Length: 322
Image 1: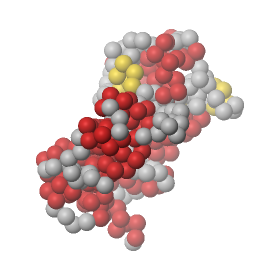
Image 2: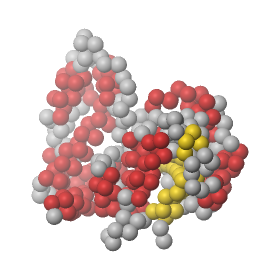
Image 3: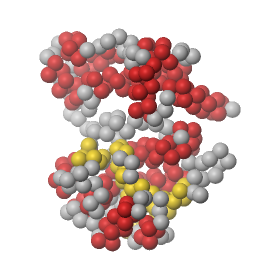
């Protein structure tokens, strides 16, 4: 049985977000090239944020049987005054209560919040709307640094491209890396970006006198296989630990420790993809220390073990050259 997905189009829907689920989930095929998802758009005729009218083929009744419900980004009432239509709220609540997976893309999270589905929960959305969403929905534990948030029954993402990342994450969770990688190739997008990766937040470029952590980051990248402490990084940058940590986060959106882990995992992935080194050796050369630590970080990052990642990458590479 194909998995039924209902995409809810509301007034002010963001056109890109509306199209992403159909594109990604229709690209998810099994080994026999059969689609694994049925995607249908529902709602009343609405005006999109791009200035054209969207006329869905289905009404809200399909939310009663959908396995997954997706709410794309909007610029409607849920973003203006914190309200959502009673019929929409009731349909979303009923879908959630019967066990449907609920997903939002970008400001679609405002609709879930207005319907009460995010109360007391962590949730992601676009960083540019942080002030507005925190003001309208203080009961939500907003995180505007991450690309997406998977809480099992409710998943939320940041804006635009992060919706693609979340949809591919769902495909990967449902059917594994092979299917997700094939879907990504069909869509001509990168197959994976970690949900915890920082959004590309607009930050002021440091003035010349303030620039400082860039050279230290370059220095740390040449020493990933070695222990690199926060104190050493601050000393290299000729700053106090407190000043260095603040400026590092301002420039990268991450703490120094989290940035180092990301770089070490990226180095480990490159070594798994391009060499035949044993997992222990990959862990040492990437600075993760042990095979156990590498497995834990890779599992937390992309949900697969090192050996499975290596097999998947090499199989995908072979297919691309056939």
